[in-house]
Amino acid sequence: MTVASAASVEPAVRPPSAAAALAVDPVPAGLLDDESRAWLRDLRAQGPVHEAAVQRLHALLLRAARFEVARRRPGLPHLRGDELGEIALEAADDALMSVLARLDDFRGASRFTTWVYKFALLEAAVKLRKRAWQGREIPLEQERWDLLSSAGLGPAEAAEQSELLTALQDGIAALTPHQRRVLVALALNGVPVDVLADRLNTNRGALYKTLHDARRNLRTYLTNRGFDPAVSFEEHH
Amino acid sequence: MQPPHFTHMLARLLGPAEPEIGCDQCFDQLDSYLDLQLAGHDADTAFPGLHAHLHGCPACREDYESLRALISAQP
Image 1: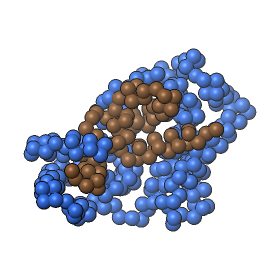
Image 2: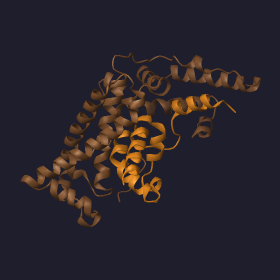
Image 3: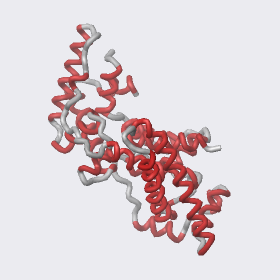
Image 4: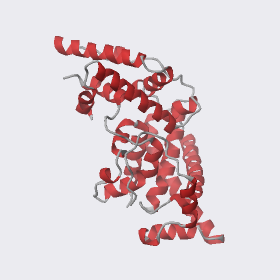
């Protein structure tokens, strides 16, 4: 079992030396369950055995992609059944390419099927999020503050909320323009990170790093003005 | 005590207070984390920062929930 250390939010990049080591030293046999070992053996084989394993793998990935499509279907009423089927197939095709390209990255810390499923689910989810936002404008401004009504609060709580809201708005205004746009779009307006990454020509990891930095700066801003953001968050967390 | 929608907005804006990993690391570790979790082990200790990331990143949280649902649906 690989034990990771909690690190700051940085895109994880495997060093070339580690990748090279994996290429010549695949998963130690003792770490694998029988099914995972059989998958690796057949996918690394040549000829008909390899081709049959790839077909089985694609079928597995397609099942996972269809599972994800079915889960998200209620939120996508504008997509027809054949469009959803095409998305699932594309997701399975792309996931197959990813799995085969990263086969030596599989270290046996999970079952092989769990490892491959995540590729299909990710591909399907990203495609569906993008389709859901296709043609929609990305809200980058603070449009949601007016939804935060203080109705029902007592005078002291309403004043507390108003003070915190003002501090939040000031703290957000103090961020860099890029941090502000990313924080507002992702955290306030609910734009999916993949969709925003696509529009800004970046990737999920880089964008989340920006969100993380913006959140840290906002926490610092609030703390410096006497608020305790940890308490507010933990109440919900 | 602030209303739930206000604390929910705060949670989204401020994210997790504890250290967290990034999206790429989360993807790399998600399958191992989940298999360990479903086997009844302490996955949060084995993969520090992943639990916090799942609270801070809605997309990774959805990916986690989908993978968990898919694995749980297997015979």
